[in-house]
Length: 275
Length: 314
Image (cartoon, rainbow over all chains, first blue to last red; front, side, top):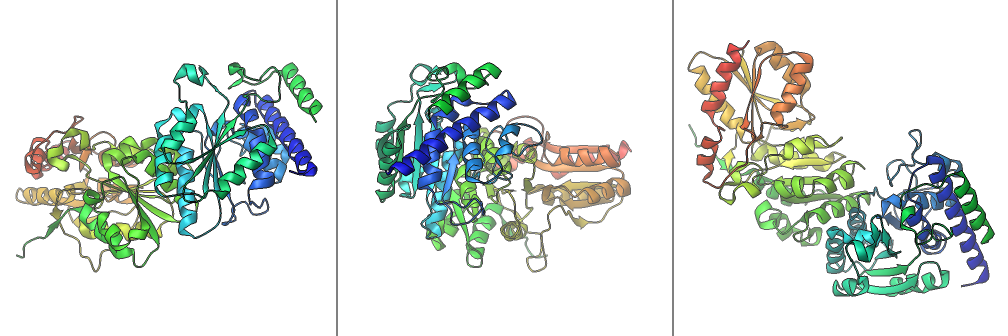
């Protein structure tokens, strides 16, 4: 990866993190931990990997992203605003009654949101449907779905995995945000969904490991997914919940709570300092 | 008089998919029940547009949503129990909330599943599907209407829940002239003393009840309410105003289905007695269909009893 791209991605990821915090702070509610863990993944997807057009959000031949872990919508909203799908000012209105930025992803009113999600386990199946439709259309468009590690406790994730492998959906790529934490604690303590690699392999998926916060690692992973033919790929993205804000990192308490004014100021300062 | 031909609406559903598959470009999903839901008829003819999802109804509904979100029309089929019951939340959140163009073909509704018993006899689907904003809920009365509903659904934009039965029921509508309209009742018999509003196979039973009542000098109007949501408010209000008493008949729990929908319209607009014939808040059971219909009161005699009572309450 060239230095200019790397610099751009770092800057975009920082802006996504700032957008996440701005919205959640303004709303006094939301899910910062899992939004921050996928910020780098979203920067890579929207600035390198995916073929989208902010001027025509519903362009039929676009690549699709399904944020199956729909509670981390603030991160998707931040990258969509950064890309120009809608004005950045809207982020301040996250979760407010006069905004189209719903608490969980909603496709009808939010430009750039490809699927309504929030109830865990449903988005991945919808992504399968989109990938199947692309095949039927004989279109090269690709479908990406970000799935939470806790989310893989939902049986439907494995129903979707069976479906995608059975129909050879090699235009489909899941990104598993493996941050290790869910609301009630560590995923391995709550109800252990690991090992994800062996499970997906057993479901006949192409399994790729990546560092969710290293753009060169993500670049290799997405290239490997694109190169794989005949079956779907999953990128197991090893991430840090709350990544980029020292006091939020690896803290389960930041799954679904908003920073106060002082915490917000500190978080913003840390992210800006990282650039 | 010529014998009345009987056919299960699920048969008509499968035949209609195969027939209209030539004219329209839709896909069909099933969850390992193609032989029973009759989507197998379509599968045989258009294997490249048929996708078995296996025994995973929740996944199937969300997959259908993804297909619809990509601009194609999917029909998703299973038994009513699993389409509306097991997969309720997927139907609500993946299909209903984003108002996606998915057509749900739910077969084996009601107690006329027969021998398989209560686990498979869905008596709640009209109620739960009716509570999803924007969901059209349709139950055809015979094969002619089932076929018409399928073609209508293909040409309508939005989620549709279609309820079909396993048990053969009389074909009463005319295939050449019948046209289905959303939110429009079909009046099958004129009457002035009471209106019998039926849906699905209970429409023909209501017609039998009207004949019983006619023998006693009671004039019963009979209406087919295939469109349960939206319900034909104008026709229901007209029934209340013109006949002053209503009896509903459905193969569903009396809570939440057609009877409730009719009562909601009547109480808000033109109050009159509304008595409901249906399964009276209990689970089904195994048995031969005619025996079950008798035991659960889904009979012309019971409809006629309720009609007399409703008239007496005027």
